[in-house]
Every structure is written in structure tokens, then in C-alpha cells.
Length: 241
Image (tube, rainbow, N blue to C red; front, top):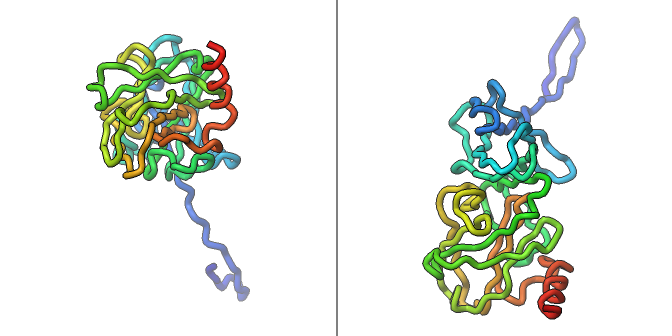
């Protein structure tokens, strides 16, 4: 609070902070420099605590690369470019700049620090994802099942995939191809995610939530709060096969 003398009267003024502005740019807007041209200032969503912006005019079936920035200019970029195959003509990009949304999973979500970048569009859950990793030479995909509520998960995998006190590299990709959507660290398409198990590791499950930009590797039995009724539904489907 500052005090000024104006016309013999003291006037109190409150110090006003400057809110951080995040920008989205990429192929859909011609890679305009953040803060200029067709780059998009991301809007804060008070109900989720995330920042959001929407690309429009997309061609269904085409790949698009994009990136978010902390402030104007090219110096504040978050990670590598993300690449997504469009399933609709518009796509909402969601940024959690501090990786704060860690609810509903006792084992914790990744990225655990830094930013999380997600995406959401119509019909995106009509596509399946799979996991590729160093545990099988990145050669044999592990299928994921859509559980509903924006969440994919693998079946329970034996600890031959991830033994106790073991580090693996892995990546999520659109089923059957590296050429479309693939998800590495921070949802960028470059690089692999690294994870180290603890000494009590048993079996393994991979979880992915594209719309919230987060993923996890959990030991079974995973927190039921994490998987919710979707996991129960998956179990029922297995029994009915």
C-alpha cells in the first residue's frame, strides 16, 4: 500500500500485481511469435486452475505441432513441440504451469514438477493409445483401454516389465504408428519419459489422461480412487470375454 499527498489530502493506493500471461502458438496459427500476430493468449479457468486456448480451422486427420510459452517472445517456451493428429476442426490446449493437479491418485501423477500440457477435441477418445518402452526394446506395443472420463489404462503387467529398483524409458503413442500423436516428457513429441520403480514394486500399470496433460506408472493394486469405476468396468468386460 502506497500513500501520496494530493491537494493536501493523503490518498492510499493499493499495489497491483501483474498477472502472468501464457501464449499458445504452432502450425495452426503459422507459428506466430508468442504475444504477436495470431498467437493466442491463454485464458485462466478459475474452476480448474488451468490456462486454456483453442485452435480452430483444423483439418481432420492432419498432424499439428504446437507449443506454449511463459510470456511473450520465443525465450519462454515449455519443452519441445507437441504433436497431435486432429480428430476435429478445433482443439482446446490446456496448460497446468506448475503441475498442481495431483488429486485422485495416491501414487502421484507425472510430470511431478514443471508444467503439464494437455489437449482435448471432439472424437479424440475414438482413438486408442499404446505404450512403447525400453522394457521390450520399443518393439512390442502394450495396448491401453479407454476407461471413460478422459482416462486410458493398460492391464496389469507382471514385474518382468518393471522389476523393483529399475529405471525404464517409455512413451505413449497413437495405436499402430509413431507418425501421428505421440507423447513424451511433458506431452512433447520429442524424447522419452524416464521412471524408476521402488524396492517394493510388484506388477505395473500405465495410466494416461490427455486432456489434463498427465500420466502415471503405478504398482498394482493401484489406488481405487485413481481408477474409479472405470477400472471396475474394464474388469467386468474382461470377465465377459
